[in-house]
Length: 365
Image (tube, rainbow, N blue to C red; front, side, top):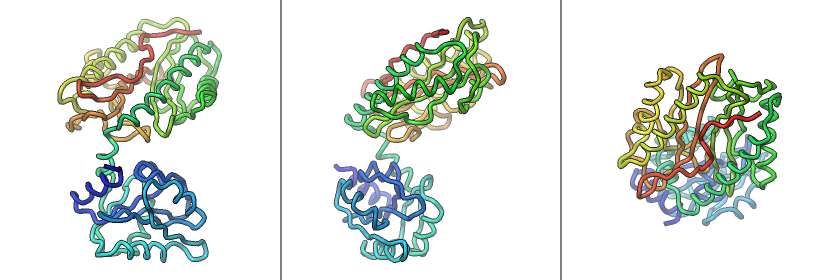
């Protein structure tokens, strides 16, 4: 089945009359149409059966129609008129009574929601995200191949960047070097590349700064690449110069937790909860449990973060074709941080680790 057909079948099963998507990764996944309209309203109306309709500024109509992977009826609007008439025409063209509308709770903006509510005031508005996630989580062979190509770019360029690291370089220097290599490989970073050195590594989402790398530092390096619309995501922590016994202990503990999480993902009936528990148990046993302050992993594909999530309480089984990370960490405030992140895919025989970059502690400088 095409992605649109799968979407409409899922809507019928859920009793949804219309799903309304705004520009973003869900629209691109389902239709091939990807663009940003800033403050101008654009949306796609997908009925339970029949043709999709799109409301968008007149100037965006040609490229939307050229990119669409299935027939779409376009309802354009001009700045002088505003989108309300076009949106009302699109809803009317659907035919029948619209009782239930699914929208993207994490993507649709307030002004877009208010426009929908004004045109269809009696409709029940529900969250479309779980339904669309159920379609996107299990990747096709083509999607997996694109992700594997993105991994190759990320790993080859990361290896070259690590080899070039020297004491005295700043975090910004390291991130810029990696980004330059990713772009030279014909790709772009999948998100802002992150480098946290020494005590800065204790912040999982540290913003790169001018701190210079020093002997004894642990340096957390997190990033990835985009190839054919699909992402990679990898984190490695390296040492600079000579490390203390405590720093080495923290590293080896996270490495063991990473291995435990990946092993748990291979087990029959594995879930986000079981993977999280396996990784967390290692860190708890070493006495660092209070310093593992995030979930063990997340799904990824078109987006860097998407379902499924490796987190306590998620008992849904990890199904064949689902791609996700295992990335335990320890973050000691004012001291150091360590995170080791790998990408995995669930298969009929368990789970395969897609990333191959060495995990043993590497010291440079």
